[in-house]
Image (cartoon, rainbow, N blue to C red):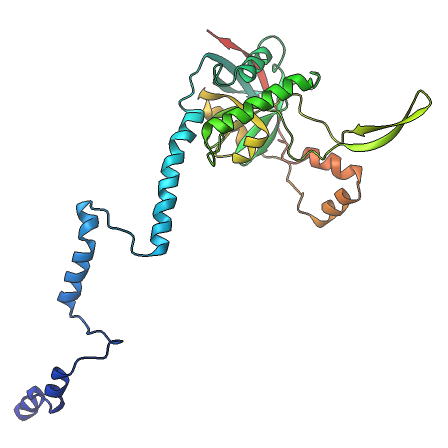
Length: 302
């Protein structure tokens, strides 16, 4: 046994030769556990000390650039919702299924969106939004049906659309206006509305070409409240205010079960393609809440 231990301890004849010849470049020398731990500690030292090391690769440089861009955009996003001055306050009392759900208090941006804020104020007073329903619940926002009896006045909706464009410019390129929960906006465009179709009509014994609008254009009374980021609203709605109190009520609205959106069904797509009116009727019901959600009372707060 002692002889075997002594023989094992003796260095082999090849050992000295390996010690004097360097390893090939493609096979770096292996580090022991202590040396490896020391190397890791040295590499991690800048981060531990709060020193920012320069990016060591193209991917790292691109990631750093993206972070810088996001940091530049963040103040603009905040400006569009959190830092716009509130010039007036309104309230919406909501019921779900006939039971009170609470009150939503809205701060309006009369300086940034004078036409939009004035429009909203005119609809929360009198009989505008009172006894009218929320008609759509989708990821990102809930939508109120507005006042159907109000006519669509092009001069009004065009001015509201111009304010929407101005607010987008104010936010800066690439910074969505509807980037967070609590934004209150009036719908002024319908991105899914097809363009008008030309048609021949007889007038005074002569044929004339007129444009027939397919679908119903927004009349500037429907409004939405965001429950999260909803950048798709930037093209269709003008920001008029934000929720100051009552986001818990908005959450209750968003939790109401709705009619399933079946637009992806091949049967629906074929029906829509051939102009089946049943598809149009069905589409209007998508995302509609099963339970009636009403604005029972609304008005202006002093």
